[in-house]
Length: 449
Image (cartoon, rainbow, N blue to C red; front, side, top):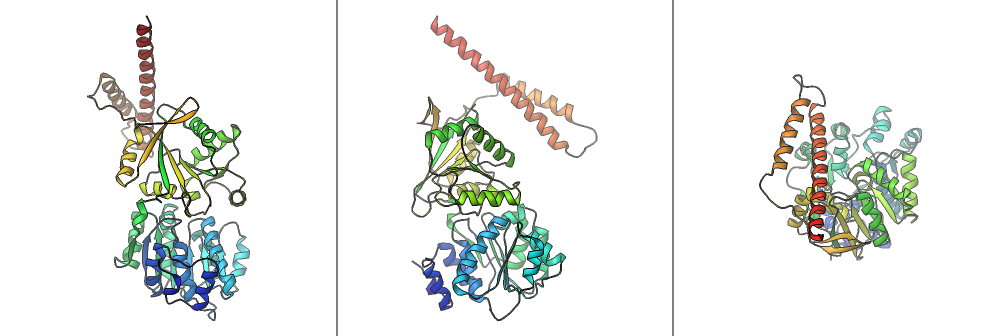
């Protein structure tokens, strides 16, 4: 097993890492650190919880010069929670070293305070892009020409959050920098930065991007024609989890499920991007104080935030990006503990299930019945020729599109058409379910008579 001491790191840094319990290298650290120590740019595709934070922090702290009162490195994170977490890791090491001035620039801290802190000459800045721009650029209290290393952590989230213009603005001010990019996925918006600053020689593809620990078991829960919120409530009562992290793909759904569970008498925490800074800070403190056994979260809010001892993960719906499934599942089964990842599924999500199975995920299937969850098999729709019912639906859709269509294409036209078609499909599906129930009743009556 590779060790930190095998690298050309300062002796005092290796000793501090060992004192803090960081002796053995995670795979991403073993691949990244040698390249980073040479001052070369790189892209590492690796998810949260893989040890990537120390993969870039250790080389940066090793190279910082305590005698130079200039900003030598900047680490950008997409959210204040992630920035604070990196800052905590850095200060944990620095408290033992006692050498460097490290500054956190993020929301939740008064801007005037951040501006005053800049005058002290920080050598390492850990920031969100928005706050770095507000404090550094607008108030002209920072020069970036001295920065030798820039880290983009959770780079796909930085792009998704609309920070590309600010990132480009920062890059243009740097003088031949070392760029280290860490990302779970590689969106197209990152391509220009990768091509210009990294190239193809140092792209590190961690093999576990579509894997989870062998200690994590994967389960599907059949929710065909059922209320998902009610199934979540029943699941919690049945499972009685030690610590359950529930994922929803939309912020509105996170809010609605949270309110439903609270109204059902279930105490739970909530994490999503629309919480105020004060609400987020208070919620994270309560979560880390073990006030909740249930946490409802969105991918963006939960990603990168370290919540230890999660026993179970529940996906109310599958994420759009398959890599995010593995990220979610990877929140449990850590540090030699067993874990379980449960996912709701219906006919609409069968393609996602098949794709995940192609990546090697093995599911067992559960169905709620008489107050408990029993094992069953995946229910797949029967393939059949187009029925009269389907033809009728097709005709309704065509008529709806014709009514919605306008001679002049207006903003939101495609969205309006889609909403109208979805409404027709939902109405048609309700009618089919109603007819099927009536058919079953007639058949049951015939058998009884």
